[in-house]
Image (cartoon, rainbow, N blue to C red; front, top):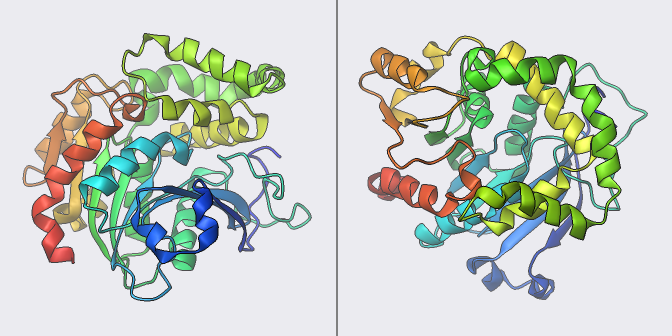
Length: 346
């Protein structure tokens, strides 16, 4: 199925798996260890991958009242954030669960699942589009996170735009902090990278489907080798990002990611100053010093508009796609930013 399929409104948890085979023991003690747990489910009718460190079910027993939730960039593959999340979970003393929820349709379904739950059912919504992805995240919170949970939302790239929209559409969410990493929250098509990618995503993306399909026929070992060659220039590549990159060599997931990207170019226009102002004390912005998706000019303008805000400019040379080689570093930075707030959230 391609991204142009309409939203399916039904919701059902269908399958899950644990990266650690000892999960079969069902011991609650296992949740205290720093093991990654991956779950596939249907949300808004689309396959969704959830990566979890720490508590796996917030509705059972005496669970933590604070959840760190990662809203990814595009492509919204949670595997890219594994090292970042694991480091954050460890740095927090394993006291708080750290979850990431993929974008709808940005993961390869397990053999027992399809990309959408019921292809015979069509709805007016567009779950793979930008607006649909926002509603998808709100639906995930409604279904899997208790309403009284305090939320620390961590957005990356377009994930920051999604977070602002989530806070705007559901102001009753118990958001205590939102960390915006390399935020693409305005004028995306006008950025240096946007000027290149807008025609590709909006008019030429269909041309990419055939080569992606042909590459998808290759064995995973060969695809992984090719990915490592592409990333060969990165001295400190986080090798845990290779499998999620390989997963994108798939027509369905790539089409969904490109479709969402095309809408980003057309719909992410003016910065939402009203929502930012309403939540300024909860927001931390972190801009890159050489980021072609959100240039320094955007940092300077938002800094002038909100001089009292916690708005930072990177001085460490971290790239927009920080998960490739700086996940541990960024996790440590976030801990320092929120260290003083942690006790007030407990």
